[in-house]
Length: 267
View 1 (cartoon, one colour):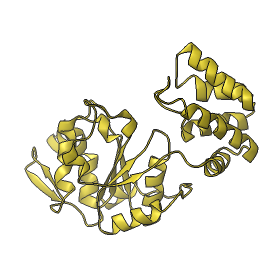
View 2 (cartoon, one colour; view 1 turned 120 degrees about the vertical axis):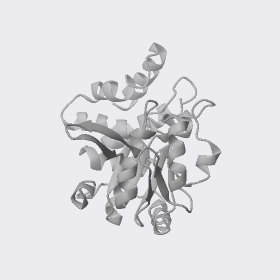
View 3 (cartoon, helix red, strand yellow; view 1 turned 60 degrees about the horizontal axis):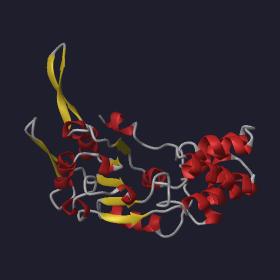
View 4 (cartoon, one colour; view 1 turned 120 degrees about the horizontal axis):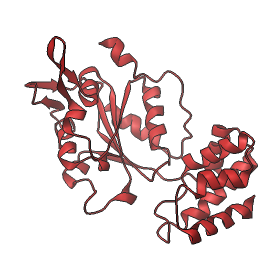
């Protein structure tokens, strides 16, 4: 099974631009195997950060994209039928706990609350995962760590983490980087000039000011990288921004006109 867990090792260095002391804080948290929560808006670098840290620490990373249909069995495992009869198959959380990977539950708030409860025994001094259907208690490997991501902007009475879950984690806040750093990231990831990258960031900053005033979410760093990638391939900047920055985040005609106007200011 060692070869199976090795497939989750990150071989190439992920590009991550440090913003503050998040790397040092995460390393300290991992040294005591503290469960961690990465909080911040969509597309601001949370997933890239955990990929970078897994690479830096030399640990396998198992990522689970959470959704409202995900069951506890999807996380911990289930019995399957095959030609030989029934056999047990570990889920991603069980594999990570058993063999010492970092398990990253992306957008955990999307999962049903009865599903997230299964992580509780792994996030306190017990560090165990009960496989109730199998009748097994998995003692977490010494290298195992649980990390979740969480977008506070989406929280509501129906979709929020329980305090009994939140208080089991340390937390790092993420946001869109400062102008110069974000420009550097976009230029590095896309190959466009610093001048074009800076214009894209300026457009995003204007759009982010509209969050809560007609926009549910601002333009993310990920979206800027999409725009820059199209521009680097020769797509006209206005068209690239329309496809990657304006149309995906709103269907409102007035808001689209406002965002198109912001784009035309810079291009």
